[in-house]
Image (cartoon, rainbow, N blue to C red; front, side):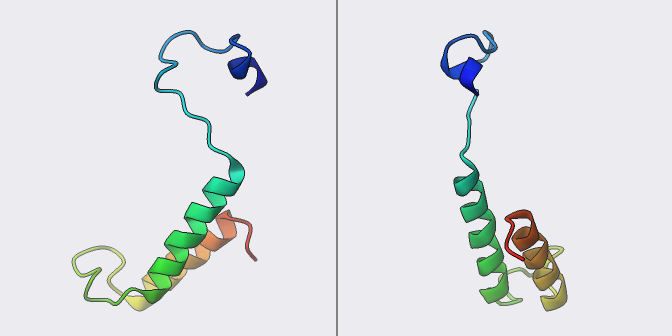
Length: 69
């Protein structure tokens, strides 16, 4: 990250290069997990997460990825 900020990073495709802060990533994971816990099955109809058990399992996986045990 320091080499990229100092200009020594990769020269090609630097406009597509994006660095995310870890707090932003954990916030997104926690928000997605919270949404999965609150959404109804009808909104997820036709997806792999239409069952409540599947939604809760995915929410638990996202919370673990975010570091929230």
